[in-house]
Image 1 (cartoon, one colour):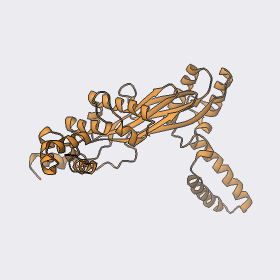
Image 2 (cartoon, rainbow, N blue to C red):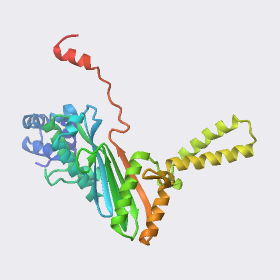
Image 3 (tube, rainbow, N blue to C red):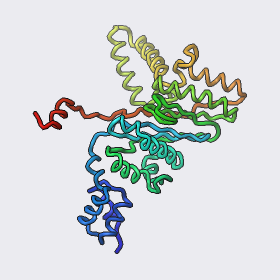
Image 4 (cartoon, rainbow, N blue to C red):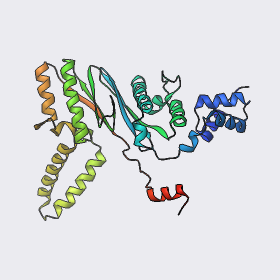
Length: 308
């Protein structure tokens, strides 16, 4: 009989098992959903569903680069202990490599095949949940590419090559010396990890953020009682300072605080005899924005011991 995509999806929603496993279960049981669920349980493939609702805020950020392109992913687990597991690390490293081949989109990366498992990233994670025993998820994936130049990376709090708690990609477009571009790119990526810029340049900052800051500065300035013309000048000055603090090229370079990042880029361009442009960057921090569930450790111990 023919198994429809909707049948596979319904079974996956109920069990948390991989798509191919769900299709196999339905095929083996002639489309009988209840029998298929039992089949998956017997194979140990449905137990991942019990874990899929648990908060996964630990894990790893993984990066992969190849010349003029780079990808970065965040794969979450429930505990830092799993992040130190070599099987999990290998999986995250492979997922980053898969993102490099797909252009880094979340859906495309989830659907990409892994050589080690012969399955998609999504299904490989489901299998890993059943094997390792914790909820895991591919939370974010991003990609940076330049037409000519390099994409540099940096990983902070590294646990293994290309894996850590904070990951950064930086694109440098130039026809100049790639080795020198890579050296500066690595330094800029380190800067991004530390300085947390929100955009490369002022023109790329979200207009809503700028307007909100202007309103705050205006309220503060008007409390001084100065004339409106003076207040406008005060606001302009504060906004310039604001851009210097949050835009990459205007920030003081962490490697040499006496110069801005833009000055360092200009110096390299002069040295290699070719224009250099920072095209974009991506900075991912593990667990950023995830609300971790508060737990009462003493209560958990008491419950495990059968006491109140």
